[in-house]
Image 1 (cartoon, rainbow, N blue to C red):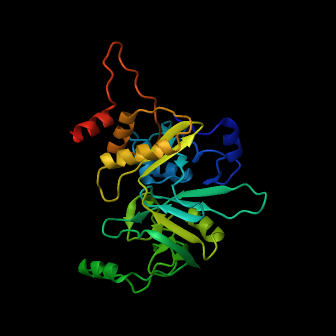
Image 2: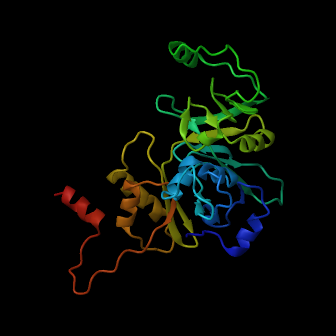
Amino acid sequence: MLAFTGAVQAEEEAEWPRGHYPMPAEGNVIGESFTVAVEDHEHTLMDIAREHGVGYEEIINANPDVSIWIPGEGTEVTIPGAFILPDAERTGVVINIAELRLYYYPEVAEGETQRVETYPIGIGRDGYDTPLGVTTTTMRLEDPAWYPPRSIREEAAERGDPPPAVVPPGPDNPLGRHAVLLDIPGYLIHGTNEPDGIGMRASRGCIRMFPEDIESVFNNVPVGTQVTIIDQPIKVGWQDGQPLVQVFESLEEQEHGMSALIDTISRLNEGNQNGVAFDYEQLRGLLESPSGQLVALTPPAEPEPDAEPALNGIFEELALRDE
């Protein structure tokens, strides 16, 4: 199990609300991964994920051998609670759609600890992409009514089940109890009446959050806050001289090829102040099989005694391409 914070920091963070972290003094990693034991045989993996502020894909990828619906009392579950901060301006709200996660950098008073909040989200499914770019929050709505868009009304009509013109506040409202409008027509950050969909690509482009998370955002993010929406499937980080990566599946369902590998190596080398060596083949494997897990890169394997010196696999491959 990888833990990326020390015991003292972990003790300090225990007093912070869920999802809130002090900005790291060095590096760009927050939080830590840990394990919990299932206490109730009726608890699902998604129940546990929600309790600890992680989404569907995060909890599934961290526990591939654990049953989603019946993990079993006493089963150890990994909580992937360590995150590399996205490579974006640390102001306002930053949404990394590849990661299915939102980051909020609140303004703090002089002398107050700089902090970041992070929450899992749901985003648009295929054909309903969440738009990228920089926008702002424009309005906050409590107990909003939902007006089904034309596409939903047409699909429902084809099924012979036309929806009402408006869905009032209540348990059937897919916006939940809180919504924050963006300066992009038709797009919101909102709650949900189906929390099991958080951490999935399941919406029609809007950004969904657990009800308790959107309530925190609703109450604390001012109108006019900058919102930066990015697609960053490969994140690199450093902590205590250790190179780290998180790799997520590309939304375009394209494999992370040679160009992505070279770019990631370049980004790692930019922060490699101490000249730490790492295993390029391990990195290539992470790009080929993205899991979203925060992984520490290991040193390269020692060459076998009396073996002829050879180029590392990536450079050998590049050399062959140039012939």
